[in-house]
Length: 245
View 1 (cartoon, rainbow, N blue to C red):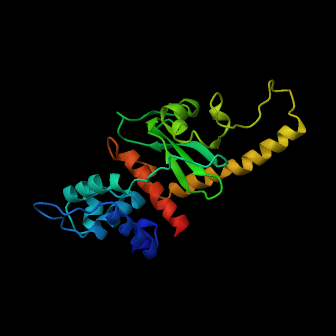
View 2 (view 1 turned 120 degrees about the vertical axis):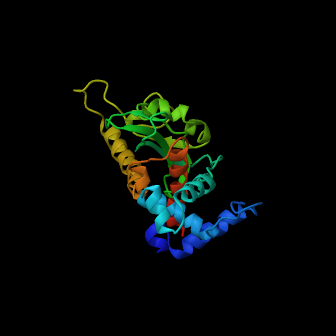
View 3 (view 1 turned 45 degrees about the vertical axis):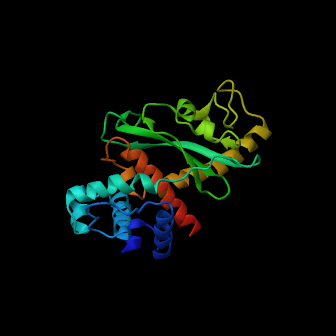
């Protein structure tokens, strides 16, 4: 059941719960306690992100009320967020790209190139380990990646590392493929070879996006306000756990 609803093995889920308790995510409360145990509440949040069931459906699945399920997600969602790294060794190579998350809260979203209201999430992974190391502040989906790179904060948080990206990051400090000055001008042989190597490495972040979107809330997010940011940050942490075990 744990693996089906969270995407984590039982061992990985136990490790997550232990980490959360160490971080103080389950403090002793005054007044009325939670009806569900801490482990069950963590699983409820992960299951909601994984399945994107309605709040009424997820509440029925865990034997609680719709309002209680909503409060659990509001309480634990931010606590599950990935802790981004702030320092990197000088030789570190990172890969950045933006992904669109269709979002129903139009106050934080905008119509994007896929003609849906979306938010633009800048995601940074380590080129060797494939772990997600940083996430940007979500921006409206019509913001192009070259602007989002700076405005989301990922430019600043990855300042000490080399960052590679696709051609959409032109004008930033990110390393992008060589471009032709004119459409009929061929690239030199060494530039073509460099671009081929660049594509091969950068493709790793596309594979990461494909695995992240298995958590279906990132395909149609009904959460409001910071909900899409919390979901992306929490799912990034779950994804990293699936890699490191």
